[in-house]
Amino acid sequence: MPVYNAPVKDMQFLLHEVLDIGSSAIPGYADLDRDFTAAILGEAGKLAENVLAPLNAVGDEQGCTLENGVVRTPEGFRAAYDQMRDGGWIGLDCDPDYGGQGMPYLLNSAVGEMFVSANMAFNMYQGLSHGAYNAIHTHGTDAQKAMYLPNMVEGSWSGTMNLTEPQCGTDLGLIRTRAEPQDDGTYRITGQKIWISAGEHDLTDNIVHLVLARIPGGPEGVKGISLFIVPKFLVNDDGSLGDRNALSCGGLERKMGIHGNATCVMNYDGATGWLLGEKHKGMRAMFTMMNEARIGVGLQGYAQGVVAYQNAAAFAHDRLQGRDVTGAQNPDGPADPIIVHPDVRRNLLHQKSFVEAARAFVLWAASLIDAARRRDDAEAEAMVSLLTPVLKGFLTDKGFETTVLAQQTLGGSGFVREWGLEQFVRDARITMIYEGTNGIQSLDLVGRKLGLNGGKTVMAFFQMVKDFLKENEGNAAIKADFFDPLKASSKDLQAAATWFMQNGMKDPENALAGSYDFMHLFGHVCLGLMWARMARAAQAALDGGASDADFHRAKLATGRYYMARQLPATALHLARIQSGAAPVMDLDAAGF
Image (cartoon, rainbow, N blue to C red; front, top):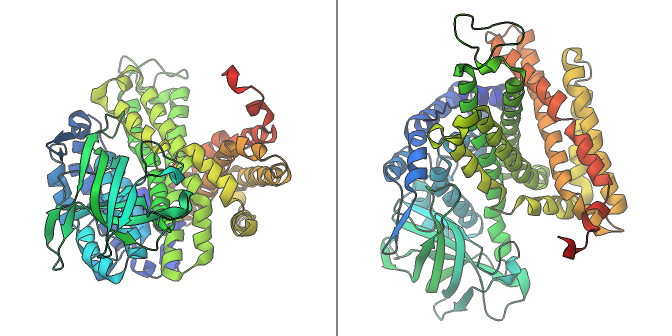
C-alpha cells in the first residue's frame, strides 16, 4: 500500500524563504506569518495523509456506478467530502461575502497540492466547483451570485463545466447544443455534453452546471457561443431546492485512470438555464474557468509526481539488491539498499529535482494570480496568461514522466497494483489530455501568447531573468552551478523566440512545428529560474547558520543536479526548433 507525506517543510521554505511573502505588498500576505501557514498546511496535511490518501486505492478499485440515473461514488468518499466541507477547506480562498475564508490563492494552491497528491480523483469534485464558483463570481449578476455562491462555497452544492460534445472537443465552434429563449427570460437548453467530470454524483445536494450553448440567430463559430447556469435542481426564490431540471447522466466513461471521479455523458432535454454574462460572449466567461483549470491541471501533473517520488525513494532505501561498487554499505546484510547505485540515484534525482522546482513554479504563479486579483496588477495578469500553457503542458508532461520513473525505480513491484505506482501512472496520464491537450497548449503559447501585448509580456519575462542574474552576479558561491546555466538556457529561449519571429511569419508551419519544443524549452527555463531562486535562499540560510543545515544542503545538491543534467535540454529543443518545418512536413500524409 503506498504512503503519502505532506511536504509542509518544503512549502514553508518556498513561502517564507524563497517567495518571502512576509515582505510582499500583496493584500492579505502580511497575515501569512510562519506560524499561521504552518497551522493551515499542517491541518491540511493531516487530512490528506489520514483521510484522503487511504481512499485513493479504494476509489481506483471500486470506481463510480450509475444506478437509476444516480451516480454513486466509492465507499468512504461521502464521509471524506463531509469532513472537508465541515472544515471549511472548499471555501478556503473564496469571497467572505459568500461564506468563504478569503485566504490568498497562494495558500489554496499549496493546500491543493496535498489533496491532489493524496487523492486526485476525489479532489476533482471540489476542484471543478471552484472553477464554476469563479465564473459565476466574475460574470454573474448580483442575484445569481446570491442564489448560487453561498452553497457552492460551503460545499453543499457543487459545480461543473460543460464544453465538449461528441462532434467537437478543441474546436468549440462546432458546438450544437441549443439555448432557446423563453418569455420569462430563461432559456431551454437541449443537447449532449461528454467527458463532464463530476457531472453527476452523490456528494452534494445540487450540482450547478455551466453549459456552453448557442442562441438561435447568433453568429457562427465561437463568436456565437453563450454560457448558461443549468442547475440539477431548480432553485426557488427562497433558496430552497425545487423540481428536478430536465437533465440527466446518460452514462459513465470507463477510463484508464481517475476511476473515483465520475466522468459523465450529460443529456440536456429542454433543461431550464439562465444566461451567465453576455449573449454570444460565453467563451470569455468560460475561460475564467479554463485558465484556472489549466493551472490546476499543471498542479495535478506534478502532484502525482510528488507522491510517486515519495514511494520510489522509500522503496530505494528498503530494497536490498547488489553491492555498492565502492564497497559494501550494508555489510551485515545480504545486499545493499538500491539507493547506493548511481543509476537509481540518477532516477530519483530526476524525479526530486523536477517536483521541487515544479512546486516553486506553481506557487510563484499563484502569487502572480493574487497580485492580479488583489492589486489589479495588469502586468502580473499578463505574465500568468503567458505562463499558463507552460504550467499546464510542461508540468503535466514531466509529471507523467516522473510517475513512470518512480514506477521504474520499483522494478517489477512497480507493475503490481498493490504497490500503488501503476495507479499514479494511470491517473497522471489524463493531465496531458484534458483542459486542452498539451499540443494545443504549445500552439496557444506560440500562436497567441508570444504576441501578447505586442510581445511585451515575453520580453518582460526575459528582462526579469536578466535582472535576477544581474542582482546576483556577485554571489560567487553558487554562480557557476546555478546562475551561469540559467543565463545560457535563457539565451536559448530568446534565440528560439527570435527564430520564430524571423521565420514564422514567412511560413507559419515553421512556428507550429516547433511549438512543442518551445513549450518545453520555456518550461525548463522557468524551473531553472526557480532553482536559482531556491539556491540563493538555501545558500543564504547556510551562510546565516541555519539550524536545519541538512535540509538546505540537500536543496542545493538537488538543484545542482537539475542545472547540470536537465536544464541543458534547452539546447536540444532549440536545435529542433531551428530545423524548421521540413523534417515534420516533408512526408506526405499518405506515407503515414
